[in-house]
Length: 108
Image (cartoon, rainbow, N blue to C red; front, side, top):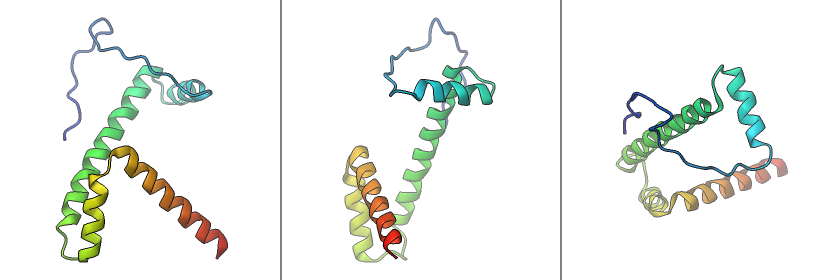
């Protein structure tokens, strides 16, 4: 998927969406936006766009890897099952694996 086209932006016509931020996040966003010489809104939009572009490219990479002759039958099956999970389930599984790997490295 391509990045969003730059449209003529007007705060009056733009979609609006209320977001509830965890404690401290507003201040963090404000600090980062100031360091990047942007408004908080522009910082949030830039980061969301970057995240969406990365996610799109990750999906393309997964598609290519699924057909890779380097993958074993078991690896292909795992990858297919992983892709059938919701994004939330994928994130939870990756976090669990990362946490388990971190614990294993601490024990070594």
